[in-house]
Length: 226
Image (cartoon, rainbow, N blue to C red; front, top):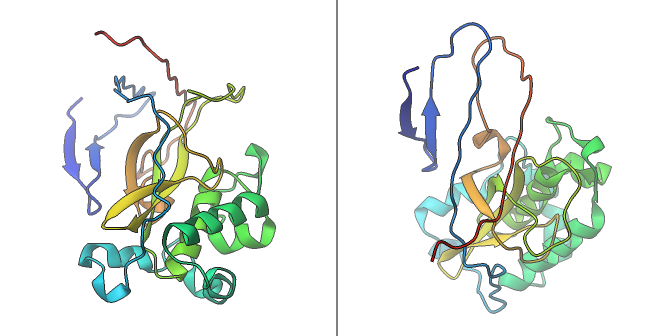
């Protein structure tokens, strides 16, 4: 069927189709080259004063569909206001990692950052939403990330693979990866899209009645051709 491609307002590469009635199967295969090293840490990375932030990062200081900065601002400043830069973001990740219990049975597509803060349960996207909201509350631009995260360098997870959610923050004039759920550097993270929160980076947006019959993700580590 005809396929159209475009860039959304966040720079993500999107595919657009008109699906016919009946069953439809979508597949893709990609070979990713990775250096095999854990994600780097920059403990001395500094936070920028708001007046020195690039214009394009300001949207990542604002509240959004799943990230209620207004409801968490007081708590964020009282808890993390004495810190700055990388140390502040890491302290936020440590808090979220300890405060929220992970479980697939806790998944709810309407749960917001504030609800995660109150309920103290969630899946990876809830960890990301709460952590990035606390960063925004303390004037650190933070954006939601979705993609794939395999089991390279860690014990295999017996659960079926799914999309993974984490976030990035703007420090020292570049974006840095943080993951409040795992809270440790990982190998082979595959970034698919970024946005204000999960509403901007859904795996698909559909306009009309439909039923998802199945969804399968597979990652395999292959030998370097060289």
